Image 1: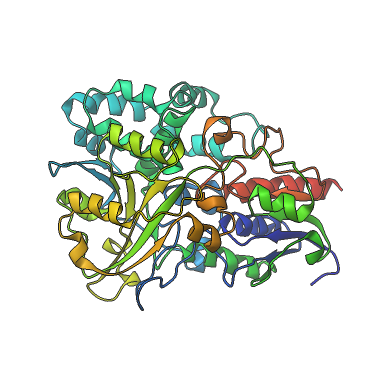
Image 2: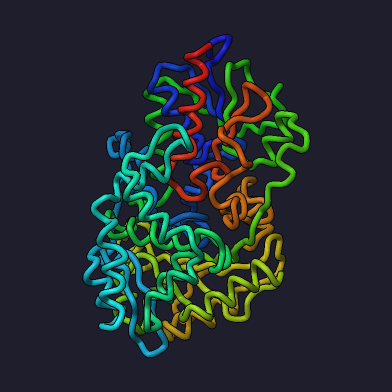
Length: 472
């Protein structure tokens, strides 16, 4: 290791690894330090239940990963990353056995909403989809670093996306489109009536139409392992089982980049109360299942989908989110986000068996047990589900916080994605990746563009770092 590194990265999640790769690609010397025994952060894969069943403890389906400008610019396929697509990216079943679907085809998706809303959905999506690759770069790039690539389309998107999602739903007359779109908004664990929540639903829908909602073959660990292998080929170093408690624990470097919570950055780098006003949001209660067969969904569309949203209706989703975010209690009937990777990727379980996970939203730090409520919801839409359970592994907010230190109080988004903090993270600043310490930067999901396995927070922070290093 050189006596003075150009950059040290703390945390080997997708953002930390991406930041390290981007710097190493440009000839800077880089080392990564990770407290856990393996790289990955929110993109790991482990045998949580039984031997041979490979589960993703956190993120499993990756619409933002396959669409990420950072990942698409890296040769990750050469290092083992293979995106696997389900027949349907997502399904949203209803009690009568029907389902709304998020298909690669806009027309098929619109048709699943029924004749009264098909046209409204197509009018919403079709003008934006041809401009998706430009839009996603504008959404996810370094804030205020350049003029928008397509200001007209971005402005058109903003007119629709900045209001609350409750406004967006006024375009529709029946229940299916608002239910599915509300479920998309709920992926960021915030009330449906918040600022810019329409944009969240639109981004997830456009991402699915553009490139699907794939899983990584073999598990989400494949994303992190590909980034780590590429970094090593570029000359970067990775040190695991290395907990950092203060800057003095790290080797001398020109820049220190933290893929951690703002709370941890402040503690380790001695920033005092700099991030005290940063808010952490609601959490989830997650159950990973080893199953004796596929989930017996009543709706046939759900049987071939990668992600299945279990609501069912917009009012139900809103009630569950409000219970977790505003009322401080676990919902009696949780809204569930579920992923069934082995429907398309049988490598994750023994022959004929399946892995499956589901989570419902709960308050930050909640120490209750949502398992029974989750399984009652699943039985409504997949009768006989409980009979297939071979083993389960549960994780509520305390367990999630232990598993990943970035999940403060179990907040898997590393900060409340609501209000202005949805867009202005971790502080109101023209340079959100910098801190009061001139050599310290933040690149986690607490910085723009926010939650998700996409590496763009790391990419953007690396850009801020290399500009400074080249200027010195």
